[in-house]
Image (cartoon, rainbow, N blue to C red; front, side):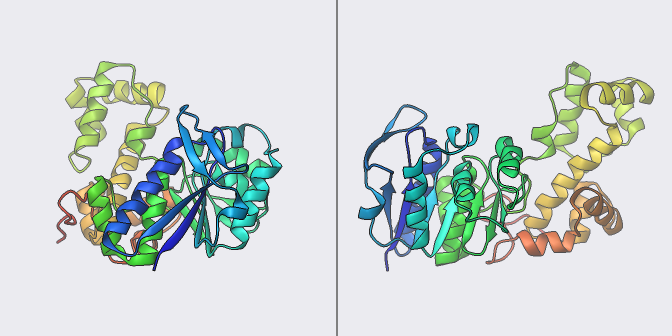
Length: 333
């Protein structure tokens, strides 16, 4: 059976919002039932992406034929001002009404929001535009830190490369986790950064330190979160007093050494849980130590428990491998 997927595109569309999901679906066709991809634009013909490259051969909604899935790609202009392009909205509405499922990548969610299709539903978009999205569409329950969110037949994803994660999840729905895993290996990506997982880790969100001393210390903690990183130990490693190190963290990172280390360890524990570790193993290998310490950190920062987090955000086919180059999960105890 061929699955027909329509991509809603327009002048200014982000290229990777289209090419990333398209490549996932192309790879899926090598392993299971093929996907037929259709580019749909308000007027048909050629559209120009934000990178200046042309997408040719697009068709109008009336000529798209039956579609199983509709995916609305994003582009910055959708978030920069209220969507005024009636033809774009009409195109998306027409396709969404006759599709089994409707997805958006990045700011493509603004089109679904403008149509009212996400009212009363959970959704996400690019982190940079999440606040604007929430103000513009107050009836949508925005999850600004999620990679992708599924609510009924609607699936929305975070910015740009998150469209690959979203599409891997759709392929898993259609063909199972083994097919999605093989595609992820081929593309050299994670099988799935689960829908509720943060768009950013502490390593990414930590602002760059100005001092060489702090940069070196941060790098050592990120490299091995489970090592001894108490305040006295870090201060001794940096050859400064604990008080001076605390002042540096506060001035440059806006937090204390202990709070920052806990967040790094929590990130690592999340990765370990999603890779198949037990709660006890994740606590120990992340440096948080005990089950109770891990549970307190989850409650404080994420508002959930480790067990609930793992059950909600692992793939339906089993634990998510940490890295898929080897295809093997991290060894558990």
